[in-house]
Amino acid sequence: MRAISQDAFGGPEVLHVVEVERPTPLPTEVLVRVHAAGVNPVDAKTRAGQGVAGILGDPPFILGWDVSGVVEEIGHGVHTLAVGDEVYGMPWFPRAASAYAEYVTAPSRHFARKPANLSHTDAAAVPLAGLTAYQILTVLAGVQKDQRVLVHAAAGGVGHLAVQFAKALGAYVVGTASAGKHEWLRGLGADEVIDYHSEDVAKATGDVDVVVDLIGSDTTVAQSVAVTRRGGLVVAVPSGTSPELLARAAESGVRVASYLVEPDGHALGEIAALIESGAVRAEVEEVFPLADAAAAHRRLEDGRTRGKLVLAVR
Image 1 (tube, rainbow, N blue to C red):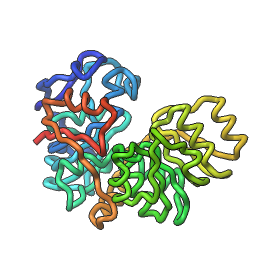
Image 2 (cartoon, rainbow, N blue to C red; image 1 turned 30 degrees about the horizontal axis):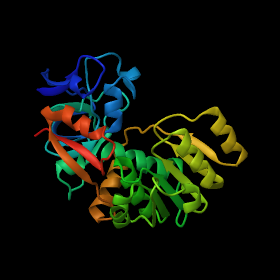
Image 3 (cartoon, helix red, strand yellow; image 1 turned 180 degrees about the horizontal axis):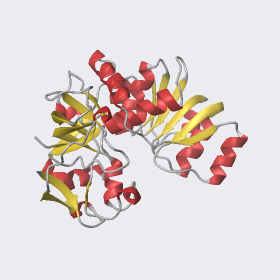
């Protein structure tokens, strides 16, 4: 099968097409013929030797975790899926899933039936970003109706889904984004949108209950702590938080937590129901052929993507 591999850490140019053996499903696993694979910031970081590179080890390896495709074969003990089912998932994360390829294998419960109203291209945009947002808001934060939720980088892959999930949970949602994306975010349900280039976040919003900080810099975490009410929660997704900021947050009665998404077929089923109901939609800004994975990574790293980028495999 065709796949995108790399032999060294580095820039997008290290990604290249290879021919490798098609995997075979073990008991409780399924073989999925990949139609599309999502591209995420963690892919680019790992390619460069950051992200979860320490878990994958040294190259060569095949990147990617977002998958949408069709079940081609099932291993012994699989009862939740059948050959021919259209599925989507985020298998194995943070271990290698090797989704930039024509086939992947993984435990059947790492997948769910894809939303019936989405193409494979659109469905591939959802799993990693969607699970990150959904798990934070429901499991970690337990967002309740009428709570105030602030989402930093609200127009990105995780951010635009976090805005919609928070609205579906009944929250009042504030997002930060550049001015050109404000109208789009309001269309997704954001109640307020702040231009982080020209507005002071601390002055632009009142106290919030939960902050989903998808930038995770010392600056944004400090801003997040400053606008969070006593007893509230700041989730710094991309990285850890300095001891000084943690101490400042504790003095303010604010909890700061990091988060790492995990495979969750059940949650993907709940997300699919929200998408099928029309309450949530995924934004795909651009689709690249599998062989152009390097171009997709260059586009991702320009930092101006609205929603998600996807590789078309089939």
